[in-house]
View 1: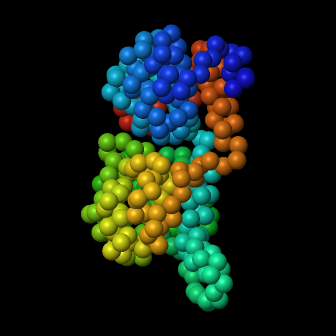
View 2: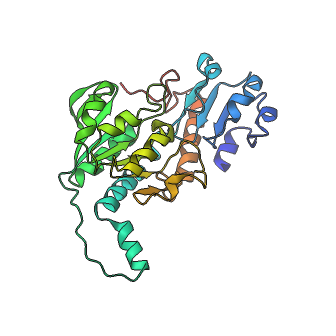
Length: 304
């Protein structure tokens, strides 16, 4: 942050200190994107003009008072796209090639021959057609999967997805997917979109991968579906409550991979986040357009 400090007077604050530190600040860089400190400190934000989030998702920042204000919100769009795509491909391979069982059997010194699945020709349905979803689609297609997207507007001939389904078509598409990948932002329209009814439409051998937000899925419904064998398994990097509580049944289900919200955190990610903010700060100081301006009413950066 040294370069940032050269261009502006910088104050640091924890979530608990934010309300006291915020008066007079016109720019706020929110590093802890899971914190609820900003809504709590909002009465002291009279001078604030711009909030930048160190994440692609801004669901904790689009509270009513901020949405109604003139404060501009920007995000970390572009930093996590490729690392998350690589993570998703790794999870697909992990599932298809049954690496968890291989490692478990190795630890038990057991020699047990098994057959594994091909990923070439498998069908992936990627929910979320922003930069992260697009990076996932490109990498999965390069690995031989057949990819379809699901977004706000249906279209054909998309350069990354080929076909994109509208949100209201998602239910009919779930039954054909080998892999359902969730990379959508959390908005009122997407919260709880994968519930018991959606899970019941999936194939019994289908695999759910969530790298978006935990609340895209009704977690209790997912646990029930995994326990009953309604779907084949899941790899979850995000959860309704984080950290995932120790008593969650997801820890012990044999068909689940749990990771601690790390799919985008490749080596160097912190430096990339700071470089993006520093570039935007230069733009702010010089009166140039900011990068990654979020449509606050929709909760994400809208592209033409």
